[in-house]
Image (cartoon, rainbow, N blue to C red; front, side, top):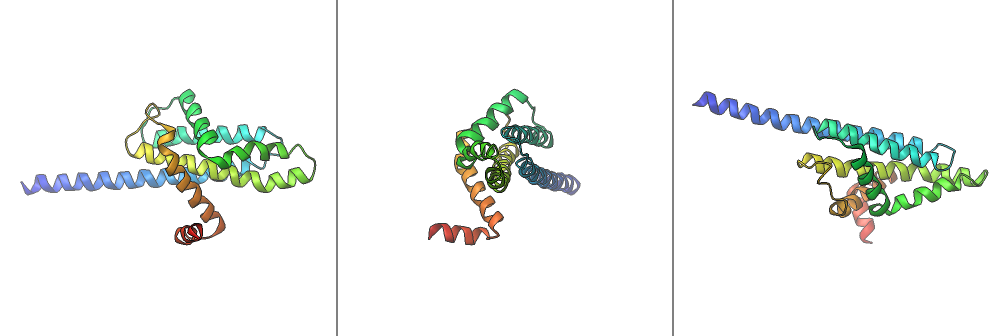
Length: 178
């Protein structure tokens, strides 16, 4: 009897460790794709940068689905990412405008060079974190409902902003309340 209890405890511990390892792997992927999205935001050609960021976000969802053993559908993920990026993350509405700034010689290119990478990386980070939460809770692409993640994405965006500015989340919360 003690043998059976010990093996059950060991398998539970292994499952917990596997889940933690999975989440850590997924977070590393999101951080890496956020970085690459920021780099893609530096592409000097208007709208090509937006397409590159979108492609990176789709690839991120593909890789996250592999980490969590979730069936991947490129068409479904495109629709979800577009919905998240377009309607749930107000900062991403500025991505198109920042991209178009690159069409203005010198000043527009310089301005967009500062704005576009930050918007791209932040949007990718928030989308990735939403998918981690969804996949970790047993969700799939078929049952992902973007409006359910509106508050979660706002919190992730705020966390990204505080991370970018070097504030801790406590400092960010206290300065937001002021």
